[in-house]
Each structure stands twice: as C-alpha cells, then as structure tokens.
Image 1 (cartoon, helix red, strand yellow):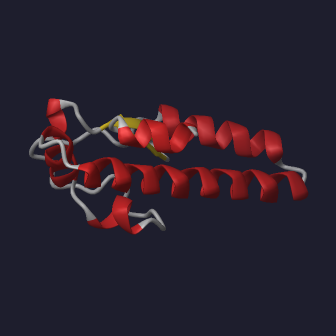
Image 2: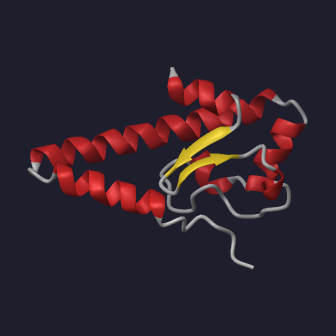
Image 3: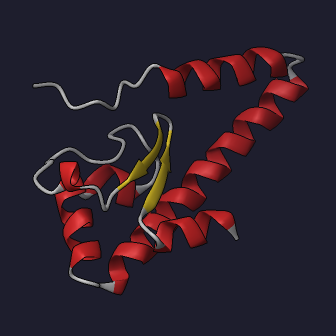
Length: 109
C-alpha cells in the first residue's frame, strides 16, 4: 500500500506536497509536518524528532509517517468525494495542485 510503504521509507504526504523526513534540512526543524492536520502525528511531533527516529533506525518513525500518510489520503479522498457530489471536482483538483505548488512548506529564514 503506497501510503504505508512510503511512510516506512521516510516520505510523508502533506497538503504542501511530499516531505522526505530523512533529508538533513529537517534535523533541527522544530516545526510539525502540518500544524493544521487532523492527524496527531503530523501536528504534534517536530520534524527534528521524526528525522531523529529515522536516523536512529527506530521503527516508530515509519509507523508515525504511515499514520500521517493514511490521514492525508483519507482527507484527500473525502475532499474529492465532496467535490464530486457538489459538481466541483475540477476546482478541487486545481486547488489541490495549487496548494502543492505554492511551496508554503519552505522554512523561513
């Protein structure tokens, strides 16, 4: 399953697009993956902590990112279903792509 496999390998899916938590840029980043997420793992754990879990070989890191990814895909599909029911699917797709492209996830200096 894509969300859990990618989570176990350090890739988190967020509304900002994918984040590879194993990248060194996250080693001291105190921000959560997504402060507005419904997922406690995305909202309550820092990127630095998640990065540490992967670098230390802790299985908890993969488990937490798998949970983050499952929440993300559940929310993405719920939004798609609502947009289809409202006849606004094309707008939903465009909005989602715009959100990914905005790169609002970039750490400010």
